[in-house]
Length: 202
Image 1: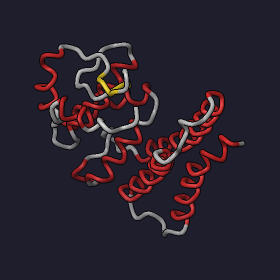
Image 2: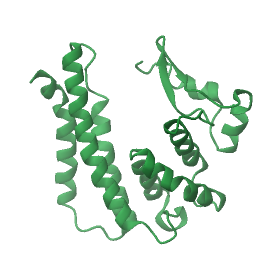
Image 3: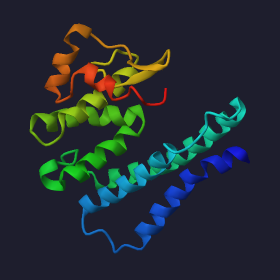
């Protein structure tokens, strides 16, 4: 019961977004639908940042984490299913057609999907980057996630882990060329990226 009470804000955040969107008129186009899906995607994640789980006993923390995970899975499955129904014939959402906000929303929804879904969209996202229709930084983030899920090293150093109280990058291929590869993908130098996480809970 204590764990459920602690994670209640996550559930309430989802309920609030659903209620707010239910009061809106129908979305006028897919770009607006994507933006609404983004709001739903982010609601439980924003609420998670305010949870105080560190003081729980191990079994309570496990129960709370499981409850949050179940809520996220429900939302993620819903948003992904809605996105797939809107998928254009060319395989992704062009920034020039849908706008940066909606196209970024689509990317984040896929980022929260399974490795199989990410693997499906990685090649087309790379093609869209070459055409100027997707963000290079988004491609880099997805490339790293897919590589790590396949048991390989990441290329751009986007994925971190907590080690001895600080955030460090998971295994990176050819570390000496990391910052050059990051620059190609419009990502800041690795030292600057890690500095952003100096005060983050670890």
